Length: 258
Ligand code: ARG
Image (cartoon, rainbow, N blue to C red; front, side, top):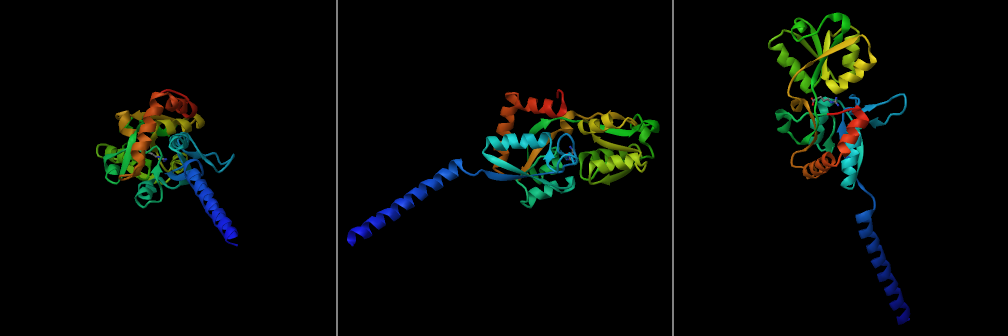
């Protein structure tokens, strides 16, 4: 009888050990942890939905997030929201990072941390060809649409200090284009790369750039203040800049240099 109990104990011990082994193995090579990326999927080719094909959010930023997170052993879940709510999503812990063509402004830096810039941009003013709007001065007395909470909104306010305009905001970029086409806006300000997509599709639109330092309007990854991810992501981003992987993504989504 003692023998049987002894054997039983050994079996229990062995089972426990095996289970223990399994656990450590899982922690190393098993299920990947998921990071939540918040974005505003109204911004082709950075992040958008090709609604006729699927409801998946795709784009340059999504690929970049998956590449960097993948190297660090994470999976990515993409959460869509209005651009104006992104910084708050980091503050409230709803998201681990934001990739949304977001510019690292001094104001935002008070609330979140940023990676280095991964893509540069310029402001573009779009209007209908027949509007005759070709310079900032031509905007005098006009209604200018911008995305709520964007640096383009800031740019419009800045223009308004010298050329009197009526600044209107909307949550989503496609809404801006709709209002422009419907004649409720005379012009909209959107970053050049995103504007180009609309200019290619809509023959009756024209544009001009309002020059600023391209770095000033560029995009970076945002994190909650003091997140451990900031440094890790930044290092991987730098590697991707050095080894050409970032350039590959740029060619894939923007089709060109920068
Ligand atoms: N770069 C601009 C900013 O940071 C606009 C970004 C808009 N992004 C978007 N996904 N709608 O304010």
